[in-house]
Image (cartoon, rainbow, N blue to C red; front, side, top):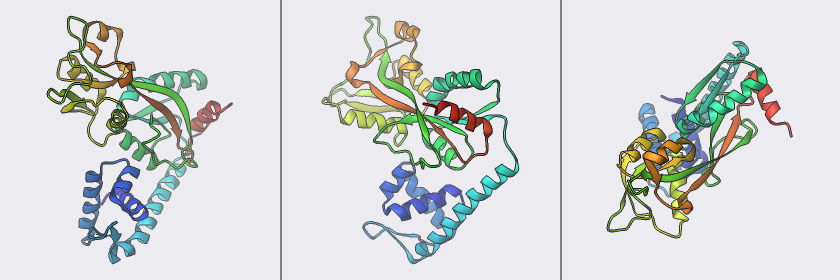
Length: 298
């Protein structure tokens, strides 16, 4: 059994619907459903009555709910106690999705070391969802991640206060032809949809792009071609003519624009995302606390 299965079940019991609970847990609904099924298989009984609308807890589910809450609370409490017993740490643990780990994190770390002096740091470089889970599990001092007002991050502000670190722009790019134009250019057409290099259904960036496209006055005619969560991989495939991809502008160099890539649409297709720094205030790390207090000064 995995801890996240228990947390998934508690989210479902509280919110009363698979779609709402999956969104709160920052996971796709099919994946969320599979995890609930895995928990039920491990326990050997159904916890959810799926014939009801909305789904309801079975008698076993109602019985298990209180025990599950106690288990999750005890596990997190034990983890905090063990960390406190182990004493303070001289370094930082920072979680960040792949894109920001290459662009924002190095600059932020350099600035922090210039202010605080040398210190060790370990980077948890995962998807936005996995970074958030690492934060919730108590294994991370700081989380640097994207923010979109329509994609909530389930982080209690009392435990995980945040600051803004600016913005990142994602723009569609495709292979640069000899004329200087993109080989694939938005919006495309229903007769000839454009090959689309995607971050993957359910990922934070893909959800943000989908929200942006839904608000556009023009319809983007796209057909998914390749799925990859790593922006640099999508960039390489776009440069190779395999399709268009929304890439962070910080990842596209002047040399890329001169030789390999071109914008695949005008400025209206560009998406702007916030960048936030979250602090795990309950972790016993004096360095992290000092950094937060310094950054929080008016």
